[in-house]
Length: 486
Image (cartoon, rainbow, N blue to C red; front, top):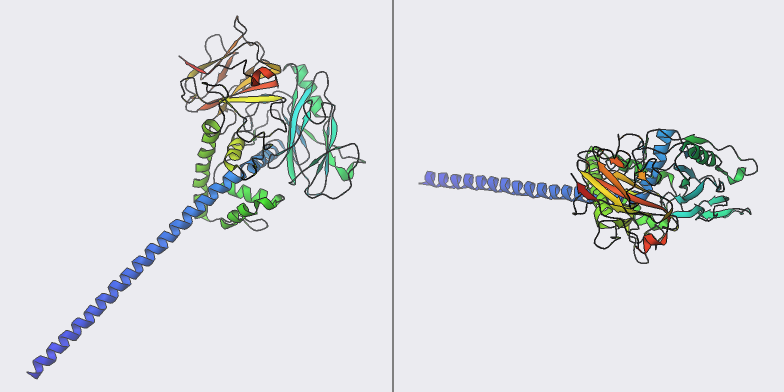
C-alpha cells in the first residue's frame, strides 16, 4: 500500500516537472516571438522613416543639386573650373545635356566666394549682339538680371559679388550683388539676328571679353580662361539614384549653410549626411536611397509636366512655366507662412536658371499632351501649327525634350534640336503660319520643319518667346494645340 502511494506521488511530481518545462518552453517561445515581432516592426519603421527622410531630402535640395550637376558637368565634360567662362562657338547641340536647354549659344560660368568678393565684367551690347542673362546663387535664386533688360541696361558693367555677411569696404563704379551662399553661376544668352557663321563668330568674340577675377586683384586682374564648349559631351543633369546622396553630402560640405535650413539639416544628419563628417551609408542604406530617389524622380516629373503648371489658354493644353510663386517669391518659393518645397523642386527638376523679371525678355509655354489629352509619344507623329505674326521682337523656337530627363532627346541628328524663326529654310504657309512636325521620321518634303523623336520615349514641347510682346500675355495671339497625325 505504501509502495503504491510513493509511486503515485512520484508520477505526479514527474508530471508537474513536465508541465513546468512545457510552460517554460511556451513562455520562452512567446517571449521570443513577441521580441522578434517587435524587432521586425522596429526595423520596418526605421526603414520607412529613412526612406521618407531621404525622399524629403531630395525635394528640399533639388535646386542646389541642379546647380551642382551643372558645375560638375562643365568641369568633367569641358574642363571648366571656378572662374572660367564656357561659351559656344556654334549653336549648342543635344551633347550639352542640361535641363530644357535651348538651341542658342549659351555662355556659363560658376564661382566661389570663399576667398572673398569677386568681380565679373560683362561687356556692353553691340549692334550685332544683344544680351539676356541672369546671375544666381547656388540655390538658383536670382542675384540680378544682366544685359539690355537687366541692371546694366545693355551698357555693360562691373558686377561685384559679395560673400555672406561681408563687412569690408566697397569700391565705386560697381553694381553690387550680395550672395547668401559661397557658390553661384550665370547663364547668358548672347542673341544675334540669325545663326549664320558670321553671327556665331560675333557672339563668341563678345563672350570672350567677359572677365572674372577676385576684387583683391583688381589692380592687376589675372587673365580669365575662356573655353569653347561646342561639341563637348557635357552631362549637366541630376541623376536620381543612390549617388544623389553622396553628391548632396559633398555640396553641403562646400557651401555656406543658412540658419533657415537647420531643421532639414537635422533630418539629413539622421540619414548619415552631416557637414564636416564622413558620409555614412551601408549597402542597406544605399538600397533605401535608390528607392527613394526613384520615387522622388517620378513625383517631380509628374508635378512639372502635368500638375503644377497653370493652364495658359482656356481649353488648351499649353501651360506656363511661371509655376505658382515663381515671380512673387523671385524663384525662392518662400511665402510669408511657408516654403513651397514641392513647386520649387518640380521647377528645378525641369529647368535650370531663374530670372529677376520673368517675361521681360523671354517667356516659355509647355505642352506634354496632344489635343486629345494624351501624352506625347515618341513613336507617333504630330503637327503643331504656329499662327503667323508670333509676338516677339527677336525670335521664337520650339524644342522637344525627354520626359525622363527634361533635357534633349539624345542621339538625334545634330542641328535638329530646334525649329524656329531663325531656322534656315523654314517653310511657311500662305497665311504666314508655320507647321512644325514631330515624329520618328520626317514627313515627305518637311525635313526642315521637322523635329525627331524616339519610339518608346515620351516627350514634351517647350515654346519660347524671345523679346516678348504684349500679345503673348493678353492672349490676343494664341498657340494651337499639338495634333496627332497619321
